[in-house]
Length: 161
Image 1 (cartoon, rainbow, N blue to C red):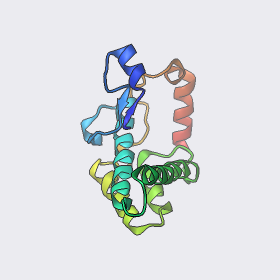
Image 2: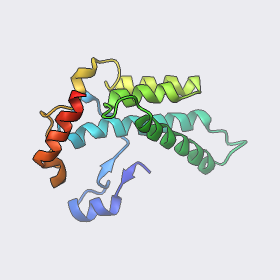
Image 3: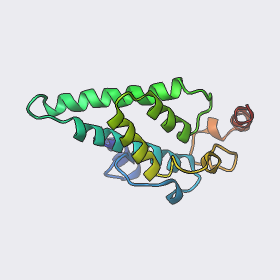
Image 4: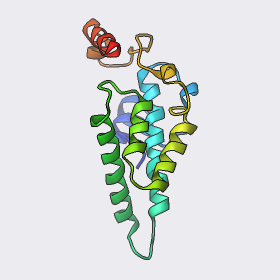
């Protein structure tokens, strides 16, 4: 389940675990400024939130585990998507998205799970400027669009707002 693009990753890069594994324990202080590495921290946090909510909600007497996973997966997906779209900042940082996830979550137990996981990974609990988007991030592993001068100008303009 946590492996994304398993066959593609195996075929192209020889990685049996796919392109990316969401089941990781990475922290912001453990990755470089390369955008894909930074995104792995956020992906891992969301995956662990999903796993913790699943464990918390699992009731074999009432629900099949597949149904529980579907319900929790749907809930987490909506939470992440809404946190992006409803965020007060158009160019929200991971920290701002995590904070919005906590604000939107109505279940107090789940709020605590989200805060704990994002704090453990150093997305929350650090000054926001430490991991804000800046032109020092490496986009070398990205598509040509993200490497273009036009994209860099858009990022700089968005950051100034």
